[in-house]
Amino acid sequence: MTDLTKYTPHAIVQSIYKSWPARRTTGHRAHLGGSQIGHHCDRYLWYQFRWADCDDFSDKGRLLRLFEHGEVEEERIVKDLRAIGADVYPVDPETGKQWFFSAFGGHFGLSLDATGHNFPDTPAWRLLEFKTASDKSFKELIKKGVKDWNPQYYAQVIVGMELSGLKKCLHITVNKNTDEMYAESIKPNITEATRLLDRAERVIFSNEPLQKCSEDPAWYLCKWCKMQDICHGGRVAQVNMRTCVFSTPTRDGQWYCEKCERNIPESEQHTHHHLMRPDLVPYATAVEATDDWIKYESEHGVFFNSNLDEPYHYTSQEMRDYKGTLPLDKEAEEFRTAFDGKVVGDD
Ligand code: SF4
Image (cartoon, rainbow, N blue to C red; front, side, top):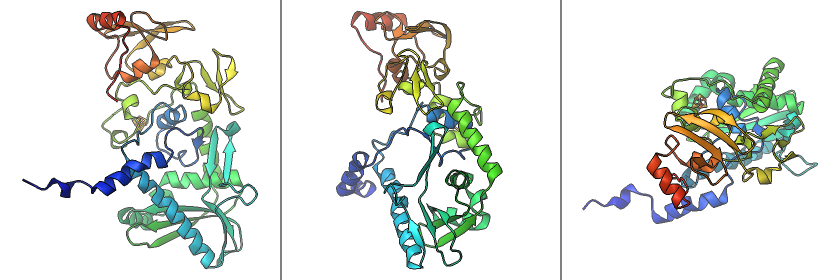
């Protein structure tokens, strides 16, 4: 019989991978991040800020470990820069925390890898951004420069300079295969920074989902997008305060619940009571609503999103969990009602 162990990771490696989800925080971020604002799709950013979906890393230990690779490399680059005489500050000496700048009441936020001055080529202060790249990607970077190689990375430092007031940026990338380094000075670009911050404002405060970059789920950038299921796949969004029909981000950086008539802190946003926004229920049309329910029509009939214990009433979580089109058929619904059942999914 074929020895299958050579096709699977060693038990020790499997244990290490399994340990990662508990070691690294993943999930939704409170603010729209500066590292995201150059993303190619407005709709993606709108979903992201509203916690409409996210990757599940519970069985992706290898990937989580890979994310740390970049952070380890950052420490090495800081050492390298100090070794050639530069003064480098990975954290703000006044707070002891990572450099962080925000806008729109804190709904938008951007961290810097470091700041520094007294470099061999200039004594001026610089924003410092560090990346790693595979050999193939690194070769492309050398040919194209940061702006054309990765517009999202470029956007991040352009907005970073605008928010921090730093007038120079040094962008350093390390080839993960060979340790070769590439450094590029990037100048401020006020026009582009303003455009990107205007975009952030639209993403944060638009009460309508912003435009999709493509209506074709097979388009290569949509095909690998983590929002694919809710964007093109007919799946209902995740359940949390930000996907609730009663929630609004306010100009002072809060999330306001119109039903409770109060701001909801981030710690409560994951579990706050819920009626799904109709624009996040892709397969049905909302036809009527009260404070307690929303009535929908789908190709399978009429149903309600509510927290009431009545036939054809489904909670937002049931709508999220069910991968098909609600309502259930008559027999299944009668069974659910008779046995006080819940609609569940397979994840
Ligand atoms: S699937 Fe495509 S259109 Fe939808 S959010 Fe992702 S990139 Fe945008």
